[in-house]
Amino acid sequence: MTLDPVATNPRHYAVVYENDRVRVLEYTDQPGDRTTPHEHPDSVMHTLSAFRRRLHSGGNHRDVEMPAGLTGWLPAQQHSGENIGDTPTHVLFVELKEARGASGTSLGPA
Image (tube, rainbow, N blue to C red; front, side):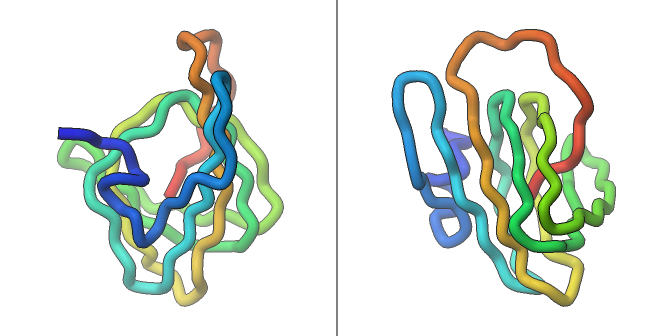
């Protein structure tokens, strides 16, 4: 079973660019939308809108609130999520295809 977000949640994730080193995904949703479990490799996330999400992973959850225009590092992770705010979510993810290296600060993806 694949956990590629483009395959598991095609209504929300779309590939907007890909080469042998990176894959760029666009993520969109509406208030109340949920995603099924999926995974991301090490990535850079850029928020195009402000949003609130609840992220579920390993039987736990946490709520995150992100402003528009935030760019940050995301270590590889598996989760599902839901839009718990009253605004649509719009995010770009630049997924790295290289082997895992040193990671920086974690934010909290869609």
